[in-house]
Image (cartoon, rainbow, N blue to C red):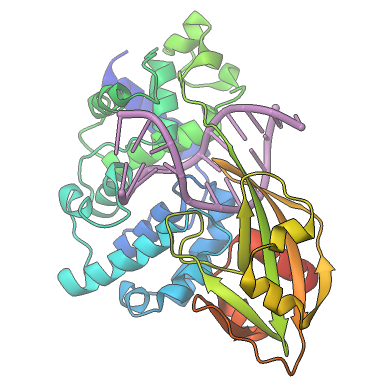
Length: 354
DNA sequence: GATCCGTGGGT
DNA sequence: TACCCAAGGAT
C-alpha cells in the first residue's frame, strides 16, 4: 500500500467517525497542552472533567503559573500520576518567565519543557502550530503494528526507532495535524486493543495483520509488571476536630500529597500491640486518647503496588497538650478538604469523616 | 534503560 | 479473579 493512500483512508474515516472533543479543532497551545498532559495514560472519559476544571480555574498559562502547587495538585486529585501536575505547574512558570507567556512553537523547543516528552511535543507542535512531526502513542503503535505487520516488541528500545520511522513514512505533506488526530482516533475507536471489528474496517484489505490472522497478537508487548505488596496502618489523629496531616516528600507514591501518620510493614501485622510497639509518639498518644474506629482493610491497587491499608482513628483528649512530630501539622476539616490527597486517603475521609 | 509513577474501566 | 491498558515521562 502506498503511504499517501493509508493517510487518505484514515482521514476519510476520521471525518466520518471522529468524536466531538473540546480540545479538537482549536489552536490555543495552552489548552492543547493541558489536554495532552491530562490524557497521558488516561482515558478520555476520565480526563474530560479535569480538562474543564483546569481551563475554568486557570484560563491562561499565567493563571496557572501564579497558583500554589498545592492547589494545582488538589485540582488534579483523583487523576493519578501526580508528577504530571507538578510538572504542569513547573512548565507554566517556565513559559511565563522564560518565554514571555507564549508557548514555544517548535517540536524541539517544546521538548525542553518539564512533562513534555516526544509524544506531547509532537502533539502540540502539529495541532497548535502545524509542524510536520509524527505523533507516536499507544494507539499509533497498535495501528502501525497491525496494518504493516510490524512485529517488533513495543516494550523494547528498538521499537521506538522502528515505529517512529514508520509513523514518519506515512505522514502526508499537508494536513499533518488532521492525520495525527486521525491515526490516534482510529486506534482508539476502530483498531481497538481487544476484539476490533475488522469487518467494518476501511483498511481490511490493506491490513497485514488481518491477512495473516495476527490481529489478536499485534502489537507484540513483552513486559509484565511485577506487583509489590505493602501493608499500611494509617493513624488518623484528631483533636478538637482538627486533623494531623503529613506531606509526602520522599521518593514514593503520592509525592506532594497529604496523608496521615503512617506505620508501614512489609508483611501483614495484625496485632495492634505489634503495630504500635516501640513507637514512642503513638504510645504517648494512646495514653490520652480513644480509639474511635478500626477500619476494615482497604485494598488499593496501583500499577506496581498493592497496598493493604487499615485506618486507626484516634481522638485525642481535648485538654491533652500534644507535641506533634515536625512532619505533622494540624488542619481543620475545611483545610483537610482543600489539601491534595491520594484516592486511598480521600476514600477514608469520604467514608467516615466528611 | 528498566523501573517507577495512579486510577478506573473492560474482559 | 486477574489481567490488560489508556493521547507517556522522568529517572
